[in-house]
Length: 463
Ligand code: GLY
Ligand code: MN
Image (cartoon, rainbow, N blue to C red; front, side, top):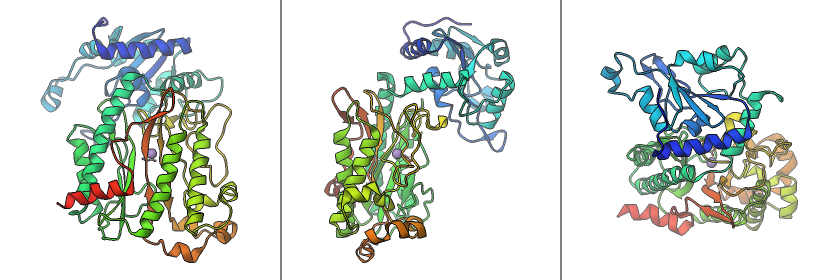
């Protein structure tokens, strides 16, 4: 057992978070860290990433641990390192030392957890072993999406309420992730002139992240096939006329994420067609960011991006018709099929383990419209929310050649004109934007977005 240290910054932050939780729920909650999953045998494991809900209240990347939160009090459950642990893993902190660091009111071995389960709510963890343990100990299925009237759902709603906006401690961590991410993107641009493959650019970007003892907050996307939205292959060779799309973000040791995309020309200079489309995407990016302020509906920001993209494509002669009517009928989604962005925090798509509970205001549901179905956030913006703004343009064969899309939208596309833009497979420009009292702060502003500045960062690497 240990007592709370009052001079411990982490402990103070965690206490404030659980006191806020205590104002929202009047029952106890237990959150599991989760446990590492074996790669091929028990001693060879995948790197462990604790549950984000656990990290929010426990503050440290523990494994095989659980915390119980009730009325502002924190109990820690975890086992001390085993007898041979020091041989293989070095000296590890004891349960009591960790309890001291996080300001736990008491700490127990894991076996004691079963005597503290009366009336508790929880949230499903991602790894199967811990999830089974949760369900067995609590004698009910712990589902990622809980049924109404279930206290697990009440807990989820309370945690969403807290995590929707960030406290100063969370933002400080995110700013660290952001500054390393900016460095990684500059390293990627600098490496491109000598790199032969996507893999080599990825290596340069992730080296910058790893050298700060951070990890990536999602699988990096570094590809000349930018039209494959979540492309996780790095085997293509780079050709001088290619665009390279890099969607790479760092994650701090305690789990806080950045999420940034830039697109640049492999030879350091956009072709005129690449630059034309780049400027349309950038106009959507800038217009959306200028609209961000408390109270504005995120869906409105998304629709604004659709409008700017449709207008830009009409001006380039790719789409034909009235841009507002084109957006109303979703014709823009042929080229911009995803949402304008998402919440960002401890998860790259923050709290998406809870489905749309965090992303969608209560009572709202995903639209089945072609141009709105992939919108991950549909709420009025609040001070302290962190969102991404990531408009794009893509030529996805499965979308533009789809028979139904051809029938619905074929007449609004000038196909001959489009064919002149065949060197633009995918462009996305993504920044992380904090909603402030008056408007917004682009946390990732240190990484330029203009075509000229991006060219300069890429070309200056040739000297
Ligand atoms: N960074 C990948 C995504 O936002 O989906
Ligand atoms: Mn993103």
